[in-house]
Length: 114
Length: 113
Image (cartoon, rainbow over all chains, first blue to last red; front, side, top):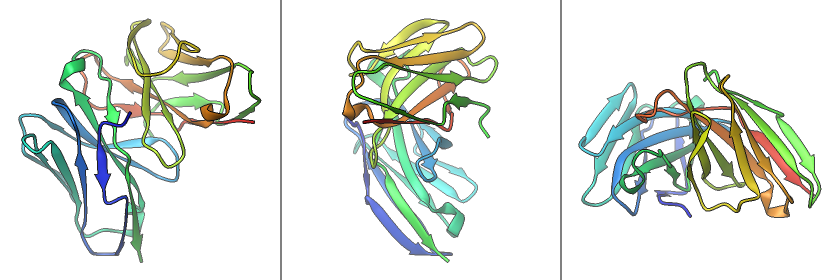
């Protein structure tokens, strides 16, 4: 079963705009990661945020984590056509410490129009 | 490029057959996880191997089994294939048992007819 759910399921924006996608999860976590997937290929790790962190930045990416609401958001600023992909959050549940049984959400399909 | 390779890229099998998928991890990555990703869904955790021992399993039946070898390669075996096994199978290697970033291979697309 999926631990997380991304919202929205699909997002279409113009190049240069910002894209925000959200992830909600069900159980306590050690960390949360965001991944990008292009056209059903392998996933690429974007950023990891630990349960004791509230915000992280990496280039044009900003991730926030609210453990009280069990939610995270990924913001992509100044989007480019190359950002078109599916984005997934993955959680490392605290209950499975030592196994790294990452649980993925359902994904947000982002389309950036040139 | 993540340095993780998978073979074959695509595979077509019929119901009831058996299949072996292969993954080659980065040198030094002694943990590997396997995921199944159905079309339009997120990846689902099948199992994880650490130093050639199974180190956690998701909600998959015993006909899904695996092996990990000392040379950082691993296999996913699926017996008695069912139509619902059609999916993209991904392996991910992890640099250390302390977690952090997973490095994914490009996946094997399995179609069961």
